[in-house]
Structure formats: C-alpha cells, structure tokens
Length: 295
Image (cartoon, rainbow, N blue to C red; front, side, top):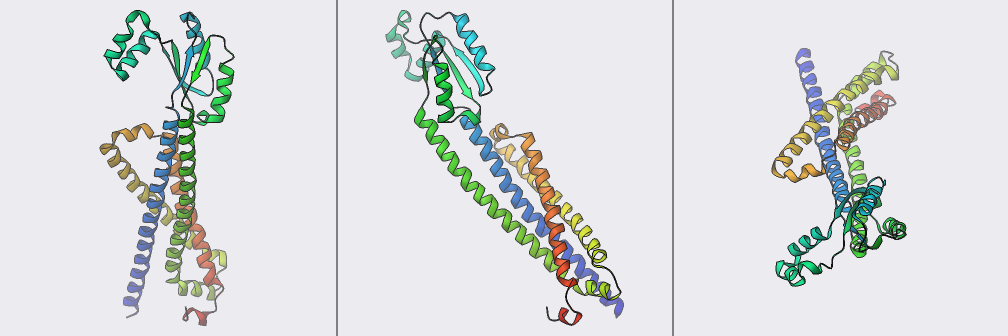
C-alpha cells in the first residue's frame, strides 16, 4: 500500500513539473512572439525613415567633377546612409516614367529644364525635421547647391505616427512582461504547494533553509531552461514559416537583434523561474506543521 501511494505521489510531482514546463513554454513563446513583433516594427520604422527622399539640386553650369566631389563628401558623413548622383538625362527619364513620354517630348531634348541633383538617404536617427533642418542649413552654405528639397510635412507625419506606435508598443510590452511574470510565478507556486509536506519533513529532520531551497531552485533553473529552449524552437519555426510565405520580411531581419531576443528569452525563463521558486519555497519554510493542512 505504501509503495502504491509512493508511486502515485511521484506521478503527481512529475505531472506538476510537466505542467509547469508547458505553461512556462507557452508564456515565454508569447513573450518572444511579441518581442519579435516589436523588433520588426522598429526595423520597419527605420526602413521607412531611411527611404525618405532628400534631394540636393545643383546650380546650372556646375562641373560634374564638383558634383561628384560633393557626393563623396556626403558619403563620409555619419548621418548619411547612401547617395545617388542623378544627371539631367537621368532626371528627364524619371520624369517620363512619372508623367509620360508625351509630356517630355513636348519639352524637347534641347530644352531640358531639369538640373542635376544628388538623392540622399539619411540614417534613421537623423531622419527627423530638427536634424534635417540643421543639415539643410549647412548644405545651403555651399555655393554649388541651388536648393534642398524634401517633403517636410511627410517627415513630420511619419515621425509623429512612429513615435505614437512606439509608445503604445512600449506600454504593451511592459504589461505583457508583468502578466508573464505573474503567470509563471503562480504556476511555480502551485508546483511547490504540492511538495509542501516534503519541505516540512526536511525541516523536521534539521535541514537548514538554504539546504532545502537549493534542490528546488536548481530544478527550477533546469525547468526554466527547458521551457525557454522549447519556446525558442517554436519561435524559430514560426519565423521560418513566415519567411517562406512572406519573403519580404527578410529585409527586416537583423542578426544582432535576433541574438539579443533569443538570449533575453533564455535568461527570462531561468531568472523568473529561479526567483519565483526561491520565494515560493520560503513561504512554506516559515509555516507551522499544523497549518500546512489548512492551505
């Protein structure tokens, strides 16, 4: 009879551990999925900002060598992502694509009113109105530059909307992290609850608090690691499927950010699990034996 009860008790503990790992896996996967969305949202934000057109129009009769020299000067600037020199002939071809060949033929080949220009793309951190105005003022001091053109209202609207999205995402991520910690903590507390009599028995034979806590915390670290690995496997599978169906997402991929996300999920699984177990075990270390039956 005692052997049968012992098997039943061991089966209950194994089931509770399995439930804990599965629950933590789902919570960490949800957290990782939201982190992935946040990461891609930031990458998309940077991509949009870095593709805002900023056109430097050069004065007529400026030598091509001077224009290319200006382009090289821009290329070495920390705020510039890329530049493209657009000749008068290239400019008229682009206009033809936009307005149609009939309109361009009406102008005539000898009356090309367009001037050569340099198309500039800024790094995302500099693609805002305040920074662009400062850069514009510096550029206008150059005598070969006739005009600097960009859509000020578009830049303002893009930055304003991206700022709002960023604040909402930050709030949701903080809320989700709190919910994840609460769910994992409650799951672990239930698991430790099923072993409260073991904790009490160890106390009765004279075990110290640190000695009692140690095996539970060590086991919880393993459970947190298993859960995080399973969550990352699911997340990797989701990313693979998404890339197969939407290849354009590859443009937003960033290896450094992916490594940070994976390491963060792994550390969260370990730290939350270990800390929750530490406090959950501590709760039963300070209870009298007669109160254990009342919980």
